[in-house]
Image (cartoon, rainbow, N blue to C red; front, side, top):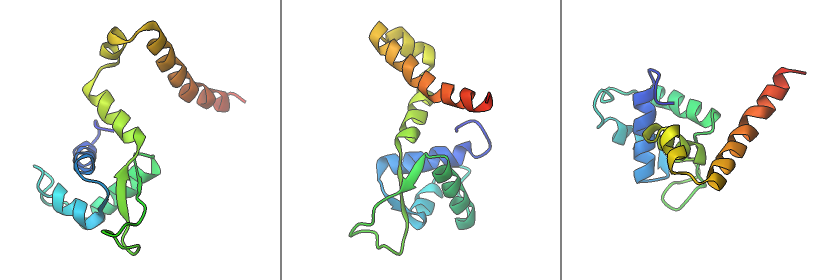
Length: 124
């Protein structure tokens, strides 16, 4: 999420949405253009990036509100984005060093729950 060429844009989008959410594409573009190396971001490029983040479950469309009319889509972070930001800042080893046995078991079960169904689908 934060290691390819779109990493800087993803990080900026997440940072903006953490500070204030939901936001429309125009609002995001205005905020993101303040970030170093993203000053020249185009509306179309941001739209593509947002759609990709939405497809992968990192952001989602927010419910219409009084501030944002129904005709304008606004975006907010999903739990997956918060997890990605947390894991970017904390190594799994640091997490496990602080976890109790019960917490480690819960983490293991959650990871297996994500990984095993995928493995089963690959081996019919």
